[in-house]
Amino acid sequence: MTESTSPRELDDSCGCKAGRVATKYGLSGLDDDLVAYWTGTGEEQYSTRELATHVNQRVLEAALEDAGVAVRDGEVENTYRLLTDDDVTSGTRIQTRNELERDGVPIDDVESDFISHQTVYNHLTNCLDASLEEPDDEERLDRSEEKLGALQNRTAAVTEDTIAQLDRNDVIDINEFDVLVSVTVTCTECQQQYTVRDLLEERGCDCSREY
Ligand SMILES: [Zn+2]
Ligand SMILES: [Zn+2]
Image 1 (cartoon, rainbow, N blue to C red):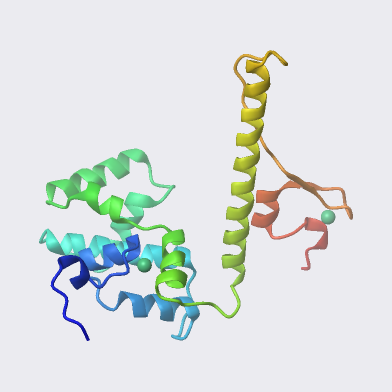
Image 2 (image 1 turned 30 degrees about the horizontal axis):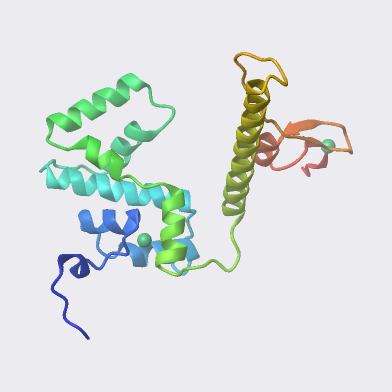
């Protein structure tokens, strides 16, 4: 074992955002928890989305404790929901942030330390070398959605560039324009059409659903 004196080497975090955040907030045992929860070696198995929420709630809890805020049972979860849930009005969100700020919680920093499910996934697979035997359905859907979304964005970008270039060279004439890429899937059994997103969300065509 070599002794290291440089501060950077003393920090044993993996260097990705998940590792940095865990070190910053002193989230001990987090990596073991993440691996156990993700692979399901513990009792329950969670998706990377759920794990990101778990990490972010621990971050919020640590920040509240650092600020000396007394935390009642369920309060961290509720505050996190008020900060992040799409169903919460912006007024409520602003009020929550103001209250936290008044309590001395650096909410801007805390929010920018929240991590995404993609960060959790990369941390698990790259930094912690964890892997799932079989990805669960939700994991597969998440990944497929991301892959197809990226493909559609790329198609839109290339289309936009191509049109703009033809326009610049006076091959075609157009002023302002928008490009919309949408992929349609048609069930040949019943001719029902779906956007890819809807099909993934509904997990199948109505006609082949078993009741
Ligand atoms: Zn990492
Ligand atoms: Zn059908």
